[in-house]
Length: 209
Figure 1 (cartoon, rainbow, N blue to C red):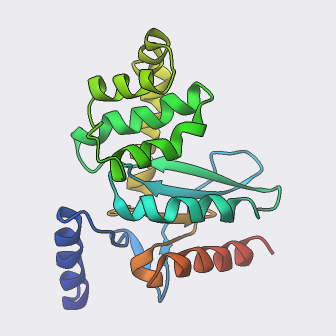
Figure 2: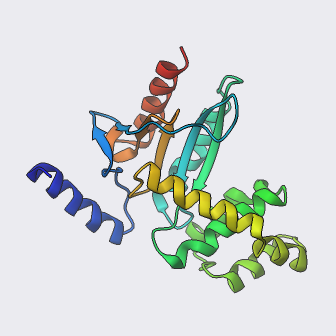
């Protein structure tokens, strides 16, 4: 590893402990505003180009970029799909991964933004299963139905796949956006939230010619 990469990795680790974002490094070839994934990864969605949004509910930068990603996704052509991927950098984040996939399984992703609001605006610590369940009930979800889904094999399988994807794409920080299984960009690489979306769009157009 070069001195430059070593220094950048040291900064990245420090940034994570402070709750900041940084770009993925290991297993990828550096470029100016993105990194190239090697080897390229296949799509999990048959016949579609996937845009993977690696995020964490506790990440303030994910909270900021999330609405921008949603607006951007509205412009996608029919052969492109947005796939949010909740990331856990340690075991304590697993329940928040399960929350996302529980909302998805229950057809209640309309509450996705509400999770960010609860954590970052209302400053509520809904980090474990008990607090998450109480939050879900407060949103009008049936307690037993939510708990059954939250603890289901299906949700745990999706969490396992999310963890696998994070490793395959060498995701060391959030938010990160992977395009077409080939490239990853982030606010650190692109210098801003807006720059991240613009770079991801450029990469998408490059793949989808």
